[in-house]
Length: 82
Length: 534
Image (cartoon, rainbow over all chains, first blue to last red):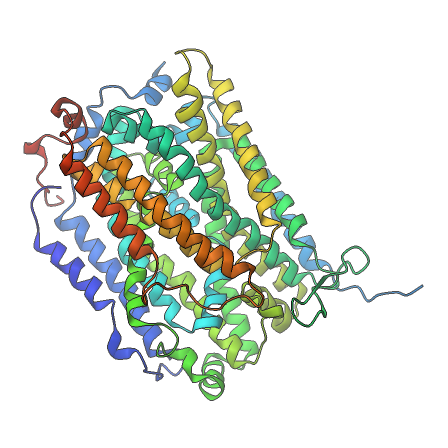
């Protein structure tokens, strides 16, 4: 994966946002039953999934598939061919 | 003569039925087994997106995710979700994307089946295999232990008073009072669960494991949601359950006083372990194509959320409901809630089967992986070509699996540690090998000596910290609570730093590897540019 894409800045931003120190002593409840710290991180999980869906669009390594198929000595697959 | 009251054994009958179902699934997957070692070890690289998602997720989530997270939340509050679950949603998918797809491509191109084959070829070194094999097997053993101990704890928790004559129970470590009287002891559960998993993987290899994983992942996700719904209902509803916690122990819902900020941040390194799990490497190689990974990359964080949020809430709700972990054993919190709160033998049986499903869906892949590594990295590597036919290869793999499972089973009979803590130590070891795999995949300048230095540095720091931080603390009476921290952070920080520094410094100080060797593992530069998805 050569070159850098702004996409990876998004991943770094997510890693920073994971450190939700501002909610450290927040005991309030979201929807009446989910503690705010837990609700934040559950939302974080959903956003992470969206970011990875975006990754498939913008930084997908399409070249790898063709490169893999040009294999020189796929021993186990050769067994199947025999 | 005295007659002891015997509890309803329906949950155990449901568990037995579930285990029989798995044996049946193993028998069916045996029919699909093509009889070649390629099919046994990597399912002939034919697994599609759904099966890959379910098998990778099922393999990654074990007793740690259900029993461990509930117990840890009981002990340290809801912050446990941020410690391991949300960070894993980000990091696991990152590793699947950056390392998994690349290793799949390299594995397919060069016909690799194990990590060690890759590292031997990439570093042009036989020696690296000799060093890496015992390290990887040694780190997989605690991972297996998590499953076997977890299964024993869960079944013991829901079978109390079922066999009062056969199993008198154990003494409380401090008060001496009898606990778990009449319950199926962990040694027996461990034996049965290991036997069932061995049967279905022996029958179908990694394809059998992938099928069983997919089935069991669906079972444990459904049962987890059902457990959450039923237990919350018993506690008066989700709002009442949370309000009880706020009234009784509000700190459960915050992190202040429960988890340090530096400790929280340092946990981010732990999920990097997936990059070096040998069983996950093998699952990656089963993928039909690179595109097969897409569903796993996107759905993994959501699946983690579906499993972990209910468990973390349940652990904290147990505190609000005034439930005491038997003998201080936080591993027993989830089974205790299922058994004590629901009191419905059918539901208890189904939910316990769900927990066992999560456990067995990890054990199976780990078992197959151990056999694969032994067959390819030890036996085949040192034998003349054609010395062993396909049947003999599979048989040798199976023999090694039995030896390792026996060792792990015997270890499980010793005083078991907190499942969550054992898992974090095991993952910390694998995470500290992550610099090695990321450098092997992306850094042409990595040398054989740098790789060896990295592994040695990891061992030299991980072993003493593991001994002080887990083994000694587990043996202490009463057991020490909370994470073992060094200067306020998780020990993984120091092990990871030592491994990284050793890798970089020694690689730069030694002669670069020959370009003709390195070139085999890097796509040509003109093909190396990321392209937008059409």
